[in-house]
Each structure stands twice: as C-alpha cells, then as structure tokens.
Image (tube, rainbow, N blue to C red):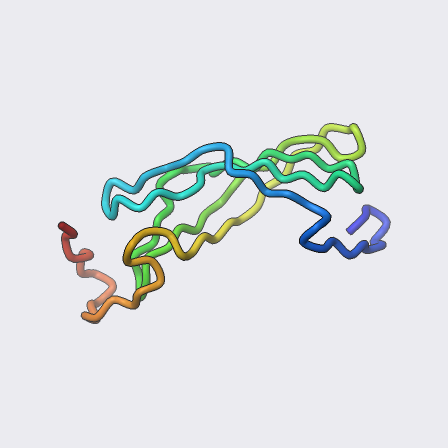
Length: 113
C-alpha cells in the first residue's frame, strides 16, 4: 500500500525473503530463522527484519515462534523504519504437533530430552 492509499498486488514471483540469521531454542533445540532480508525489486523495496528478542518461542498447544520485529531499509531509495510481527511454524521435530497432555496455564512445560 502506498502512502496515498493506493494498492499494488504483489505475487510470489515479485519478492524474496532470505533468512540472515538463526536462533536455536535452548528449551526445544529447534532452530528458527532469526532475521530476514525482504526485497521487492519492482517496487524498489529492500528491508531488513530483525527480532526484538531472539527467544520468542511459544510452547502452548503446539510449539512455534512468534514475536515482535523491527524493520529498517529503503523504499524507492529513501530510508524507512518500522515495527512488525512474525509468526513461524513448522520448525523442529515436534513443530506443529499438539501437546498430548493438557496443563494449566500456571504449570511449567514438561522437560524435553
């Protein structure tokens, strides 16, 4: 979306997202991308997306990473910054698997081997 409110469709072939870092959970051992370069050449967009805190892994009904990110880069040659949110699923052996044992919100997650 442009500052004037006009919108442009962006297809999968129009942009690239390349991981530029990795974070491994000390709890689960799952490795997640931790930072991305996002480019949209046709729109002259080149952004770096960086997690505000690397350890934002969630172990709720399934294990995934979600968290706040900061954004910096250029849009049509001009510097831009922003804030955002990223959610990652499908990482690690148990990723996407629902926990078999229900537990209350106050109970700690079971230890993993």
